[in-house]
Image (cartoon, rainbow, N blue to C red; front, side):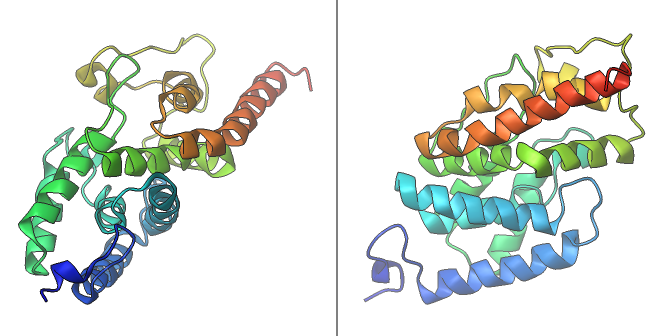
Length: 231
């Protein structure tokens, strides 16, 4: 019996698949441990854990979900001139080096290509269940207390002001507009974060998002009250 046929259900990993996942974790830890924009190793591991949880609830292939979650920010377009293909390319090279199956590699590449948010007016729904699960897990990590912290970490890294009352949020209608945006950090909550809850793909993720979304709303409300000296 071949190693591929050892898998009985999507949640089962063969010995080779488990080895690929573990080596990928080690590589991501080495590469992203000191990243300072909220797209670090710990973000990756939170997304992986959430994605596996969602995959088990939704019936998605856990192996594909784990690999895509681990590699989804390995070469993020935000740090490579807006190039959407650099992430899939780096992921493919890594997985080939480990002897991964080309079918699995292609699935992971497609998820990485589809996962990111590209503007308020841009449709970004993944074409596979595994992709929907990974995207949901990534977006859940942009909500709640950690999501708030990540938003300000990213804004600070790129020298964006926390808030400018004279600069309204912009609902970017194209990826070009979104990737070239220079708005304040608080605007990002209106331009992206507040929109995520209603753009999740799975019932499992939507259930987790409610409280996280509400926490962010309360934070922004409090922020603005303090800004105006009302609290």
